[in-house]
Image (cartoon, rainbow, N blue to C red):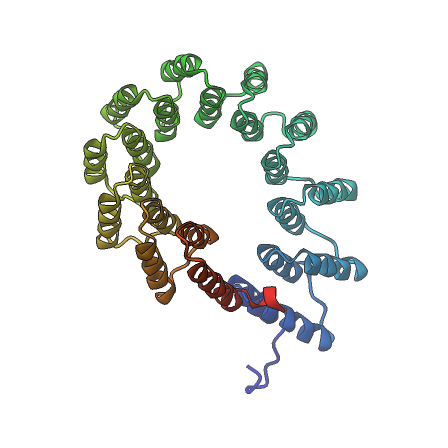
Length: 396
């Protein structure tokens, strides 16, 4: 463009910034911003929004605050997208108070009205931090002022209560939905079902499960899997299997989580032949499913079968996760096969495979227990060297 005498304008620069930020190179995007300012051009709120979004993704809150200072100093008007990026970004980083401050500024501006997605971000953030009293207050305030009929917002708080086993408040909110004339969704019901299961009341959970079936809502794979997991945890594996076959009979396709739940339940009862049968008959097994079976064999201290499932995983083109190797290294150490654990750890390091601290700690403990302190010290040194390569900023 410049060779032909065409000088890039703000739109061109914004596209360049967006491209760099989308590729994860926010630093280059910030350099282009500086070049724009040096040329005497003024950025608009669209360009700033692109940069803000990229900075949030990198967790660079300090840089976000600096950029906001620039926006306010030049008197740019924030639009709904910019506000939404701020609210969502702060909530994702756990900065709920800051998100609420932005929402207040948004409301006071009287130019932009908070959207349902803004409220959703705040409610998700509050529930994630366990601030359910505040989430309930915020929901009721929003329902009375902005979105009285938005069942999705209620679903978030019901799910928050369900995850901590507070079935009383979850049911109370569910009743509010019905009284207000809103239609609960299957997501609402799945959360309530999870709440009953979390609370440990399987009888009430099954009664509610059957109530969903006779309603105008169709149970999903999540509905069945939630209840099956509770049955598995209670040791009622045969009942769990009957619900699995009922689910399949109704044409509801089990997902990878469903199979993992079934395999976990069977492994707990040492029914490994049945567990492998389910693995053989499922489509699209993922690493989590294989890890579940590997964990079952590891808990039974059957090293040969644990590694056999690992090898099968590789043959299927799946990449083992750090959890896979944590399990294998741990069972080797439990069986006193410390040398084999060391060899596995070293081979994984040489291949550049990511390992968690747990794997190193397990081997180091086993080495110390076996009277091999110098080997343990050598492994600690190797771990430090790995960290220097992966995270050099830790050693500055």
